[in-house]
Length: 391
Image (cartoon, rainbow, N blue to C red):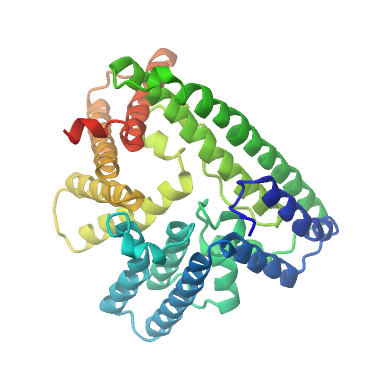
């Protein structure tokens, strides 16, 4: 059976071009056929996973499991805002993802996972949290399925928010609005080809694949660090552009994922530019929740200490989310440390100004320093330094 891994083959692009043609024609006429859109989403979801029947079964069971949890918790929340019920629902929603991450060490659990389980889990978890906060009063099953199996972003994001997605899918664009969105979407898709299949391919083949980078010498590891960082960006940003572009063609303004991250002037600025939908998701649903709860319940008096603990928790969870491997945990700790240290530096600089923000030379130096701090974190993430702690 032909594999239809998203954006990984000519067949995939040919198929979506054929299936999206009626959507584009209707859009240019200022119309939308919701039933057809839903049928395309279901068909593409089936084809993406059909090559591996165990994954198809896993995602079907997962979608049903999460639907039962979300509808069940919504019914409970409507009558009683019980904290215990919320935490039980949250844990039950996270369990499938936890087991999949655990499968790296327990191969017997491999049957549970499917392509994109992390990103689909984020959608379910955010819905449960929004129900808890009273932001979601009702979730029609058809809208839930539409959000969960939105095929352009199902495998690797970007991570959308339910309320924003619902608004887009409920609105019929005028022909002028859709024409603009179509133009932007096609530009995104072509930019994706440039990033992923030209620049990313060349970096991977001729830079990272160079025999000069094989020895574990300081110079080869240093050059590998730059190459891997560039490849990681162009490969993932290329994929994100594909996903956003196809979403636009379907009339959905999926949020941006990257905004020139390598010109960031500090670590905070970087996380406002890199994998933004993931960064903002962790910020809103982990960091901010922890800080709010800690302040409300008066766990600690020092608000800076609360923030530091929240940042550590935030990036540790992000590290574990990538996998239960030491390189990912160190990656999370590294970013938490960098974030906390910069926060302290920023507070000190406000009281004792010595690093002007409006000086172009200092700004350029900040970008260079941040770039190297980030590239070194990607070197850790890549696993190239594993030999250091496996001795």
